[in-house]
Image 1: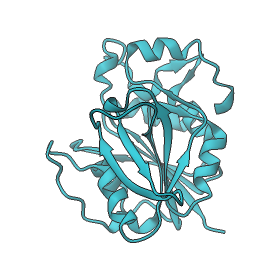
Image 2: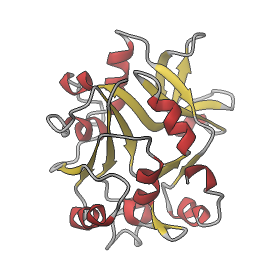
Image 3: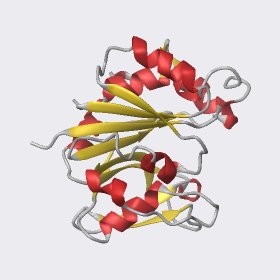
Image 4: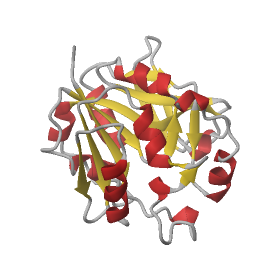
Length: 231
């Protein structure tokens, strides 16, 4: 059985949640009495080590990690100059010790069973059906369920489509890739996905539960949603 580490990307400034994130990092905003980050870590499958990428108000996230009791073996990595999700991933080079690594955004809630399903594949991406495909990175699977292509915010597609919801499993070798600089001047984790998918099967795993918390409206709604699948 392969060992697995986990990386949570928690370095963002949460600008769409201002003013609530002026003094508290987005991953620590409460959802039904618990920090977003606490929900995420608690829903993880068994992992050998947790690495949290931090930058904005990093000291608060580190203070939380010292109090949580979900994963005892943890570390933080400072993304000194945030340059995209791919850069955040590569900042963890040297920190990952297991054969594979699960990577999650630090601001969305995903069902515990869905993360377990993702952990069961050697390489994979989590997707969820959405009604507004032009607002997401859309995943196109092959007939055998492996990844064919990801298109960022494509126009004119009928709904529903399968959106990339920011959950991945990679072999440890992902950290040896050299990612290109994207047109918007950042390094994208989806480029790592595409590079690996060109060499070996990359599985598309459908999530049954996804609660995005990207802006104030979504955060307010999260206080009323059923979060039982995450527990």
